[in-house]
Image (cartoon, rainbow, N blue to C red; front, side, top):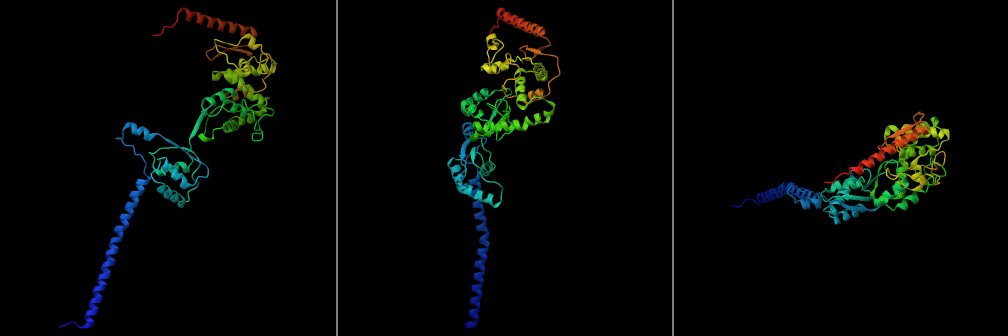
Length: 389
């Protein structure tokens, strides 16, 4: 016997429904597996693409470690699109994938992160992961050049130093320092022939690709404005010195003083001589005017001391026309607060200290004693020369 036609159709429909449900169940069961596999593959790719191109481990040979740790310098010009930065980094071997870079930059934009990739010169390593490199460029951690100007240095010494460091030519610096930015720094004394004395001695840092004479001068003038100028403004009512006179006196104190404790006393001696109209008689001013530097074995000669110069404070009473170097904060303070003293003279012992005297006779006696002591020391060395092993 055969089942009725109606029952057969109902059974077929039920079987088809079961088949459809089974198919959808299969797809539903398969979907998480496919998604999981895709996610795993995507994560595996991202982990590879964002990882450092070079991984240094304990088993890495020393030579390879040295190569890997060597920074790669790359320059990003202003206005460079993010995609071009990625291509440049990939080409330099600093990232594995420009595509991964583009994905990461989009992620940063989705986060509404403030700022953006900044132009400049960067030192990057192939041992750094992509996000670390991106953060460095985003925050503008450009290569910095450091330079230090010691207290007392003159423009000539600074110029020679900058040229020796390869920053720029000495003459370029001297030319720039003779152009007075009065509009930008209205506090600068009028009529200055150059910026001698107003370039604050300190350690500075500038972006490596922004080192120019103008940038260096601006940074040093800014530091003077921040560190030195307020000192004068706060004491302006207690001193008779103009801003130019203050810096000029401080520059002479800076060149004369070696022991910090002697700065106020040396300033006091010069202040007394200025008030009494006595020439300062400061050797550093003669050296500055002649462009020379004396040594203990080659002191200034009488002919040099008698050579006419606007800076010769043996021949000219008062202060020289400009500072003779860049005074530090301690000398600037000493020029504003000189020690009250009866001393009018001092002479160097050549150990950093000085002998101070009230009268010319005392001063000449101190000079003779120091000279006799040096002569005796030279004779002793000649009689008992040191033996080299």
